[in-house]
Image 1 (cartoon, chains in turn blue, yellow):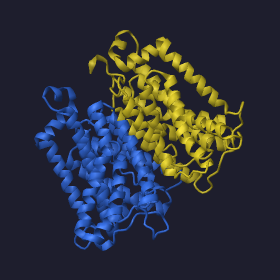
Image 2 (tube, chains in turn green, red; image 1 turned 180 degrees about the vertical axis):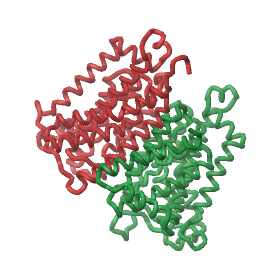
Image 3 (cartoon, chains in turn red, cyan; image 1 turned 120 degrees about the vertical axis):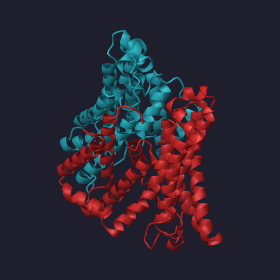
Image 4 (cartoon, chains in turn green, orange; image 1 turned 45 degrees about the vertical axis):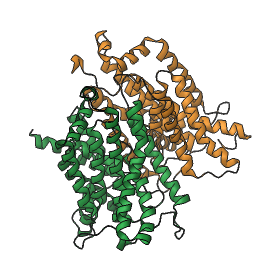
Length: 331
Length: 294
């Protein structure tokens, strides 16, 4: 089998298995697939929605590329994302009302990145200076972050004028500029630029080389005279900042507000995309685009055919598992 | 359990134990895996799958015990890919674990949607023995048994060697893959059982994503406890107490928002980890073992 055909094998397997599951619960897999593709890709509205969805996913991909390249597992992306989204959603309308749109957008994005970084800081410091396994701590902080975001929305940041607890809403006209009369917002080129920039940073720069050495062998990094704790801390902090930025972009570009109990949980979905792309930015962008279509399409299919959109997790999982079976090595 | 025990303290204690047993079962299971050098991040998914299977079978058959067995069986079923990929093919344990968790989340959400989403049936409160569900006593006995196993038996020593120095264990004639495989399957069974307990006994109902990080807390418990099973029990009780504290506070008239309640165990984990650290994890934890050093 050629290499290219082998790369497609996980997808074929995932499609096959998901189809079988759908059949088993009495849903026509071909109809389901058609709805997913039509609503995610082959309709003007769908493709615009998918492109908008790609923006936060790309930023999360950049976040994971950074941490995985350094051999660190930032599995707390969801908490960083949601907390940053909440902070942005609560502050941007206020900034907008007092200082205008530019301040709202720039300030919102900056606050989002800061919040994400802040939420990654504790696991990062514990890992860097106390050697504490970051998988566990980032996961714990993720659950904490999600609950904290909900608490903040319900108790502190709540918009008094709505019945459902949610933050203030940034008016549509004040959100990120739309591109060429479509609904796709400026976050997409921004995110794309950041993913490709991250790729270049990791492959072409001195700091990228240091992170690679750290990821391949912390021992070698120490022998090279690198400040391993500081490098570890910086990588995880940067990863958190990018995950936070993803939250900010999604709010300022699409939603404008965060409702209580909203948690898109993009984080673990993007992990396989990044691994499948072997941390290569170009491939990651391509796989993330597929993921965005899948994400938007399954959400529509959930409404149309009554299959919960969480079902797309099964597809992602099978791709991930067959990937593990095919390539028995970390990254 | 509410109403069975009058008095605030007894109710608090009962709530603590009910919340602690799933964590105890999962934590003991994860401990076995981690001792053997396999970091099982899929335990969250195994518990969730066990919760669904346990509830569905218990509801369908009317027998809680059948449900518990089904939960354990599904846990083992989900542990099989872990065994094949991580031990046979030396795939990355963390990636495999994440995948298993995602698969379980997606599948249980779908199955719940087609089976219980419109009716949300509840199971009746279980029959008790001296005030507790019999599995509680069994879980405590299991904890004591495992404490003895980890400390005093050859199998416990072998498990430890598989996690610290698998090559040495291999040289002494023990099949590392088989030992680790057995550990992974045992973890699956215990995690599935814990999940089934969660839906059948603790909650009486299945809700998608209902484990909500319980599996990850089990990982932390196992990491903090290292080889001591009794420490897993202590940790599980601590977390159980933090969960039932909210109910207790509400009885005292203090209204705690549910989101704050959900934060408690995770905040406690972070404090524990930051304070105690989880140093001296098994040296080969997370490392696949291949004969001949490759």
